[in-house]
Length: 451
Ligand code: IMP
View 1 (cartoon, rainbow, N blue to C red):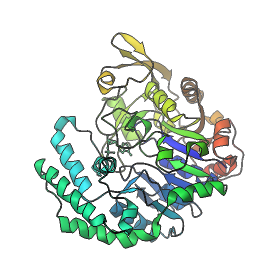
View 2: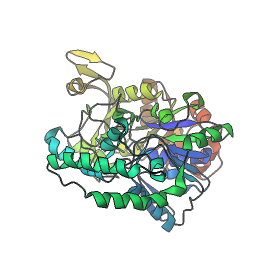
View 3: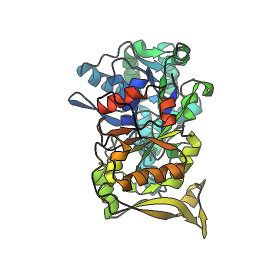
């Protein structure tokens, strides 16, 4: 067995959803531990596509237990929409979907406040997803928040009323329109009975499963560089999106975690504001956006695109303690003559190799690039690393050497079959010796993973 964290190594949208889906056969449960419906990925199930924002993609595997952990902020309206979609598609989740009673509720006033604040910030705006994530975490930290479990007891109504009044005043002061109190209250009351069957003391549940020998996969949302402490603050999300958040956000102690798989896109993208050293605001950026279909699942916004930044990814590797890398969207680079990789920053006349701690410094850096030859052939659907063109293999090796971590998975397309799974030591350990189950899921056969 193994308890493993999946963590994005950039600013989100690394393709974690596909990797979680791929790894599911080796795990008994998938646990989300931070964020809310600001996250999102599309998954295909039979002939339908689902945009999932809260529910882990593990829900589509009939045996997989799914948990929304205590570190999350949950908008019940979004949740019910997702659950309804799953029910319509015939997915049965009744006895295997659990929500922590300690997770916080995204009250209907939070998205309105999020939008009013962003509108008032003008050019300095963060570019949030407008889902009320910041206000929800702010209420949690200032101890005004309402937790999922509170909805089952008495006393929550006065807490919600208090927030509607206080935050309503702020919305009006910002020039927005505050939600009507009795409508907010009615919506919250409607949620209670529907939530009840899923609410659980998930911290005990998860630790009990570990004692029983089950394997848990912790699914990080966003990416390490959006972490509220370690990312490009203030252009970050409001939760701990590095691997460390998995423990605080689930109640599973660090001593029970076996390691971390970092998901790294073969180039870089970012949504919203904030520094982005390798951004390409030219035809190459446009090429990556079009070929990589880089438009947000949650907001539909075009993503900013640029070359792979190994300084930023190295920061993520250190923060999350990445043991094994899943490299995604390699195929997006298939047509390029030359591929650039950022291996340092020029800052105030010096070359730095570490990620500067503040936005004002990050805005001044100039990337130092290493140029690698493109392969100009398709990589889509290769099953072995040795099937890839030599220049693509060299690109993978370059990343491994630079980040000092092995690449265990290479994704060359959105479908499960478009994945190379290598018999890499750490990946094997982090999947509890069940690597062949993953290879089978990826390739549809029982061939052992090879290099
Ligand atoms: P918030 O999480 O909605 O408050 O947004 C804060 C920042 O995080 C903005 O730049 C968002 O674009 C970014 N962000 C939040 N969730 C995601 C995600 O799932 N993928 C990529 N960026 C995200």
